[in-house]
Image (tube, rainbow, N blue to C red; front, side):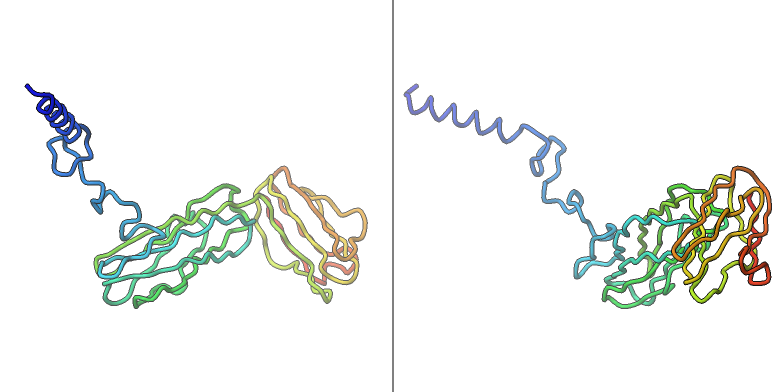
Length: 242
């Protein structure tokens, strides 16, 4: 065998080995799939946060940012909705809503191919359990569907206030869990003083404008709270600690 023949033989063997090793060869017996196969690519149509490409059918929802809030609050979480090839309206519903909470999507339906911003509106009860929750939004229409998770963390604090103008916000009934922090802030321009009894404590001195009254009831009970300076007739709040 000439020197040239030996070199050609080595080249052919090396090339053959390179073509049959691995699972990424296109159409080879190794069972691999081409790397440009759409099924293996990230961001496939319908993936949360990825717009549906032109010419393809699907619904896309943006991934909402995580939200941290307190007891007794109302929050609005924006979410972008877009669609392609979906005839008629896209229905939107809130998911993962804990018992006792109120949540809805506003508006409840959208149409068209242009991206539209909707809001997941959530009302957190005053006696909710402080924790991390996985709420979300589900969208469906013309056989297509999509869903995203909206993380919401609730802090163990309930904020109340005395409004400017001497209007006491003390009215009605408020339920809280034992161990939750209750904060009352004086947003008025004059002094106020919180009158309370067990399981809360009476405020020892007047609260100047901008001042706060903070209590963390350790056990269950019921108490009527009002302004010690201006009297119960100016407004009273019945707090029930569970």
